[in-house]
Figure (cartoon, rainbow, N blue to C red):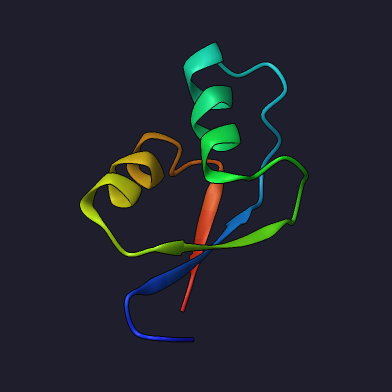
Length: 60
């Protein structure tokens, strides 16, 4: 993995979650269970991860 990037994996479903949580997941590109996306390591990304930390897993 290149420096300055994160891998984020969706490990819990967004079904039944608040609308804001679903919107954050969609904004990160996480649409299906077990999907992994590569995101830039920025404070904005960490804020999104913190908001849905119970649904995602940061790899590496």
